[in-house]
Length: 182
Image (cartoon, rainbow, N blue to C red; front, side, top):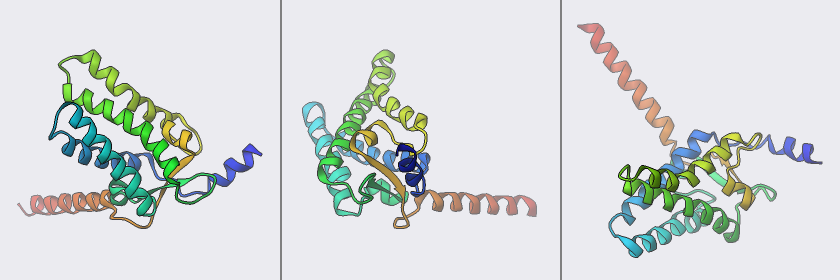
C-alpha cells in the first residue's frame, strides 16, 4: 500500500527545491522589510500578522500561491486530497515555518555580533531545509510533512527565475558581442 501511494505521488509535478527556496526567500524578505520598521513586541506582531496574511490568507485566496509562489510558479497542495489545503492545514504549516523564520530573522538582525546565538536562532530553519533535502520521493520539509502538504510546480505565475536567467543570458550575449567587435 505504501509503495503504491508513493508511486502515485511521484507523478505529481513537484516543484524543484531551488524554486521553493526562492519563493520562500521572497516572502521572507518582504515580511522582514515591513517588520524591521519596528522593534520588540511590535516587530513580532507585525511579523506574525504579515506572515499569516501573506502565507495563509493570500495562499487560500490565490489558488495555493503566495507572493513568492506566484513569482516562482509554485503552489501548495494537500497531499492526500490533491487540492488546496484548508485554513487549518495552512496554519499548521505556516505556524511551524513562521516560527523558524522569525527565529532566523532575529538571528540575522543580531548578525555575527554573537555567533553562537546566530547559529542557534538560524538552526531550526536550516533543519527544515535539510529535512526537505534528505526526504526522498516528495521532498517534503518538516512543516510540509506535519501539515500533509506538498509544493508543486504551477503554470500560473510570473516565472521570475526564468525571466532572470533569460535576462542574464541576453546581457552576457550582448557583452560577448561587444567584446568581439573591439
